[in-house]
Image 1: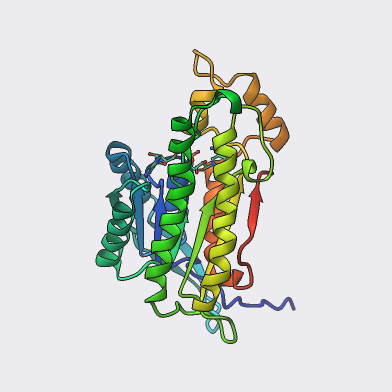
Image 2: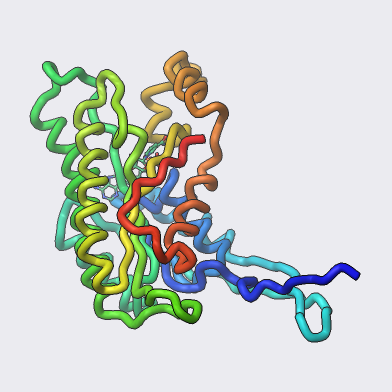
Length: 291
Ligand SMILES: NC(=O)c1ccc[n+]([C@@H]2O[C@H](COP(=O)([O-])OP(=O)(O)OC[C@H]3O[C@@H](n4cnc5c(N)ncnc54)[C@H](O)[C@@H]3O)[C@@H](O)[C@H]2O)c1
């Protein structure tokens, strides 16, 4: 007879509250959707763009329902499980401004009581100029969003998480008051011509992550980074598509490096997994998500 081992780990992977900057579209929105699909009771999307925020909120809420079959160990029956819609709160905020980041965290806590998982994905590409021709203004703008924005978000998320009790974790595991995932990039490890502010800002994200991870672990909080490869979001589309909207040569090279086209949700799902308390010993890493 075949024995069936019943996993104690069935059910929602992330039943708490997610907070995603840059959550209106692109990878941030895919992360918000992944949290909704994994059973998050609340998803907060934070973005500078009110128009895309409205659209992004609808997308997240439309993915909130999860229906599945759950194995009942005693009766050996399968019961239909219905996880309700995730509630999505959309907050307009500019991550370059500390008061906006504080406001967004406060709004999340007023609505849902806490923040269990945070993903800092608000970002810009910056200028395509070489170092000798890059204006200081363009450099500063890119750093302000990608570097300062991640620093400010990490800072205020940690401050909130420090006030919270741990979520439920398995016996013997370290408590988890919160988990943060910062968005780096393949440009945090290598570079390309014409990406100097972007490359600097993404290297800085790894620095912020490592420093914060060492401090936050004393408070039961993990801070990691992920480095996505090449995904054809709006951020890249304007740089790598021709007048007909189709990808040009540069993009073919990117995809060749990655080996294939990637789906946004392949990044979203990794972020959910990294915030899970099952990853309790993973802290301060920069995880490549690039095929
Ligand atoms: N697309 C890729 O291939 C790729 C690869 C590696 C890393 N990334 C990173 O992923 C993150 C998300 O990028 P994406 O590709 O989804 O692009 P995207 O342009 O679709 O999304 C970026 C989001 O950030 C928001 N944003 C920009 N400035 C902001 C600010 N000051 N305050 C609040 N929100 C702001 C935008 O409105 C937008 O919704 C970025 O950090 C980017 O560097 C993307």
